Image (cartoon, rainbow, N blue to C red):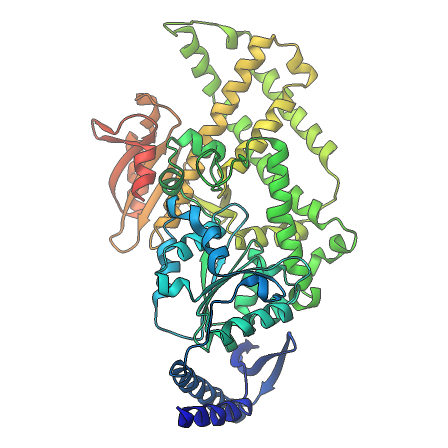
Length: 594
């Protein structure tokens, strides 16, 4: 045993003289340049190296890692220290849970259903590898802390005794976290979960601390937090290739149903996007139950997320065109405004496309023929005047709410960050005949957010003077009609979005003709085949729904452009069935199978 201790001392001495960090490569003006990067006192350092020096440095770094591996193996052979230390006896710098306190913290998580991404987290914890950390990131209320609690609760008694949970709080820095990790390492803790780590102001610049030191000594470290953009910045810089990323923001319909136990596309439209529908699952508050709660979520989970990350990334040097807004304390308002504008354009599309295309006329006929409560209420509405009034009111509201003048450069950069946060996805539109331009429709991955804002906006619009000329019954019918149209458009977006995410090897888009369109086309470039779909927020089978799918000129043009058509289907809310050559697919079943 004494021989091992001597060898450990020699290894520690030799390791101390070898370089920390890693070699990164960057392409500048077509040339590959190599940099030695390391952290020192929580600060990121970087130095350019020529090819020969970079090669020598890489050998030293690799040698250090091999010595660290040998050191870990020898340390495992030393007599075990007493790890039964109560947290009250240790003056931790952060909030650390171990032992009985940790057991109480994770106890209730055993009863909760697990998200699909839990398997990736479990796989990281089970793998026999060193030098890498797991980053669990996503917007608020998407289940990150619950995943951690479930992972800890699933551990064997032996592994649980070597597990710690660290809660970083505002005011902590990486120096505080480092001291607590050092104590945990000395007492042979092997699994460490660090929540809200991005609250440490120097996290982005010093994140390599976790991979280069503690993960190299055999610790399994899971970092989580709501500051998603900060994790992405650190992954591309400090942590580079020494981390696994696990994103929780996008919650597809299947997981919404499986985890929360709630079924139905309309429920997903109203509340989808977070793991907080209420009651027996997760949180009791319904995140998107009101305009106020939705605005608070956008402000705290999205706007402050972006602003916090930009402030601490490269000492604020990545603000680009947003610097002026930040200096004037208007960046948060600008980000909120862009999110609202995306929904504004969505609402305008519903009004102009649905009402002006004659769908209101179809509703008039259906209401007159209603077997139980026939009514001509919509016949009393001047469709042209009504649509004009709504559009005018919408524009007026937009002007009244605008607090910040936002340029196209601001919008473009903010949209880039929304894409990085996995909040928005652009769905392309193709044209026949083909056009040089490409149009994109922005889909929001959290449908509850979009619905809550659109609902609140429309209720305010109906207070416009022209709308007040309608009776209370008429206004109620108008509101219900428009909200149903919004649900229809949102259902279309959800199907396109989830199909796009699940068909990475195929092209998914909308297809427009001079007259009419296919709501969704899926093209397989390998087999040169395609599938065509209509998406309808209806429970009824009506021939009008698939008229485009059987028009021979559209079919011929589509096959010429994209390949043989192998499926013609209508996705709707009714039962799955065949109607001649047209396949009717229940939307919940379709999304469940993706």
